[in-house]
Amino acid sequence: MKILNLTQHVATFEQRKQGVEEPSESTKKEIKKLLTFDILPSSQEMQLRAQYLIEIAQKNNYRKVLVGGAPFFCKYIDFAAFEKGITVVYAFSKRESVDTKLEDGSVRKTMVFKHLGFIEAEIFVPFSMLGD
Image 1 (cartoon, rainbow, N blue to C red):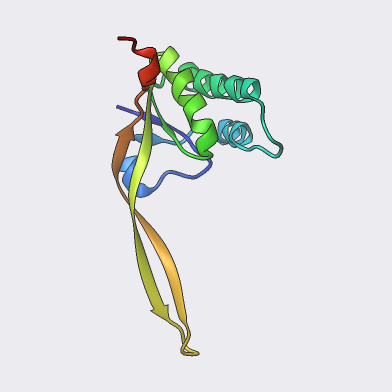
Image 2 (image 1 turned 120 degrees about the vertical axis):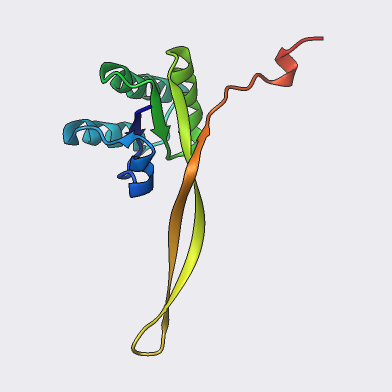
């Protein structure tokens, strides 16, 4: 199933092999704008932005989206997607440290992210709402 990349980053080769697709350049610019917060957002602002992001997926006939970014915002995207029957996935990657010895004897440490798969978002109901 094709997956729309709703992150600020370009999908990795491994993610593209698993169905992640990049939006058009103009749409990617819009997505980045919706994902970027320069001032403290209200709950209403985050709800509206999340709805706009999911509308982008719907307009482009996607039933699955890759989400990432600010943890405080991701839950809003999850709920907006759930309401429209769109599946949200998050990338799961292993971080590997690579040390490279430089000519001057110093060492450059680089983190390499190896994409291993996706985790589907689930909507949980608080225990207090389940009743007796």
